[in-house]
Length: 240
Image 1: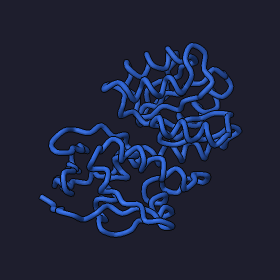
Image 2: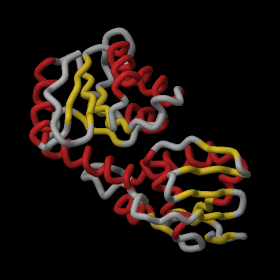
Image 3: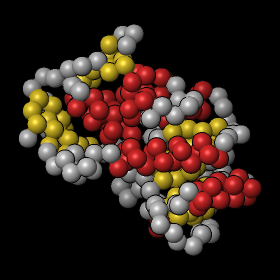
């Protein structure tokens, strides 16, 4: 593992066993003002994530020691690393690979060959989603058993904390702030994912499915409006 000299900006961990890909990605991220660390194996990636707590990981799927899927699953399963954003970067273009990555908690998915400029834009979009809501709003939004602390980025159901990825949090917050109104898939892509070029509407469906699962019975408050998108029932909602 190597690290570039610190510069102003958030830390990004680039994980790939192809040295030329690592160099290309690191160069463009550093140029954009980020601090970059690298790893070339699954175990090294997990160690770096635990020690450095990067804001985001650019993660290849085909890695020695442990696959990118394994790394992602372990990241999401550990309290210390589950909030780290993950952009999967891989040569595997099949839809099932994309769906599996998103289902495991990836925030975005980019296939090789790729545009370095697009990768930097996607990294920025993910980090902005993570920071969304930190604009001074200190109120707690409540919808039935669900409470969302917009200042602390904390979600709870019946007072029990629910661990969400940054994208899941932004999706729930968007539905909650517009509760009772149907949000089209295209609109959610534009709002939550900032309309990344090849993100498909299936991405929204996969994240809603995961969000419902994490919310338990409260997930039933998220209604599917066939042919349009999703709506969070207004129910007994209040803003405190």
